[in-house]
Image 1: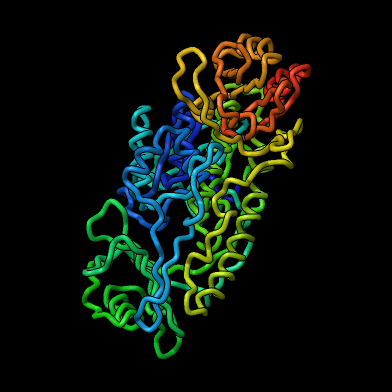
Image 2: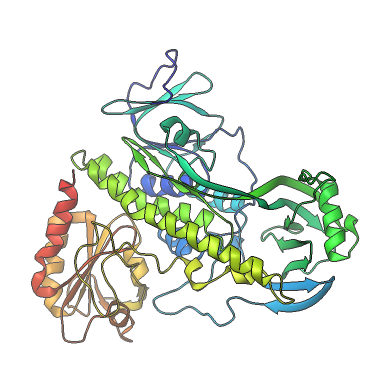
Length: 525
């Protein structure tokens, strides 16, 4: 390893199962997922206090599904808001309003047709509260400075002389990841110095808080979006000032006021209390591997890209959701560490796609804002919702398809009724939790459903859809059959992974494929 623990550090006598370095949304999502599986987890962060960062503007539809599975989506929606109308200005005058989601609406298979606006610090608070319900708390002031691996564990040295030993370590510590650097993993890509902006949280008097205001002109822009859950807070973004030599002027309240006055035509002193100041440059970089022995990378530690489309935090949340069930299974079954290789196999191509789509959305947005009515709505597309991403190439997606679905796809939702009580329910409620879910469509699947629960216990929950089996669901409107492409009169089995992607699809007579798949996970080496 490029760096090892100092000899003065004394490791813990008993290794923790998992140590997470970094307590942003990626690390917290992973910690919550592991903790609810009763996997011992510690999460550390070098910051002396929790940052009040507003950088990311909220979860997209796919991340909302993840947060529902973790049991916090209602809290997120209560604190946040729906995406706002975007008002575009030219020469200080409003020229167009845009609602990128005007024509979209929830459907039986997609309950969240749009993301939520919420400051990153608010989302992190919600996730920390959820984690605390499992008795796990972020350990602040714990900076990783050394890393060494043995055959059964990893030792992380901290700046204060302590060390922590764990069976696995996950670096969720951002684009400047210490864990990635200690591993010596390259972070190839480019930085576009000419594509820069200054950012911060500000207070503004006299602006409508129901609008995301966007002023554009020939030599720059100012963007102001109200921060939900606050009375006066706004996200401020602008093209930076440059001095006489062409160098970027560091962000400050005074520079924000000058930019505000220049591009809006309004008095600069209407803007006040600028905090969390930063300069953002477009970086497009990704790690060439996500695993080195017992150490893994997730979120910005593994990939960074343009903010266009809002996929940064969301890709990290979804990295964590992919990794959580696999890491838990390996911790519980020491014979199957190779399952962790499928994390890189599935998520590294997604990162590559994300770099491409965000670069394309940035180009589209830069082109759009040259037009009188153009604005940030050009950064939003169906791709940025995250709902179409699947793992068709994965070694875990080997079997089956229907006219609507194939192995590797995101598993759709559908409203149903509990056959026993008549109470309304949804497939997402059946999926929620750390288990695999086996859906059986039609009475021919009832025996296979009973056999799966008997053989695998709590690891698999079996639900029949009009199958006459225990835990039966009634699909009165046919939404579940439609979403899964299950033809009437035929028996169909669909195994859904704990991260709510389809593992396999098999006709009822081939029910042995379910056991073969689950047993193979235990033998992965």
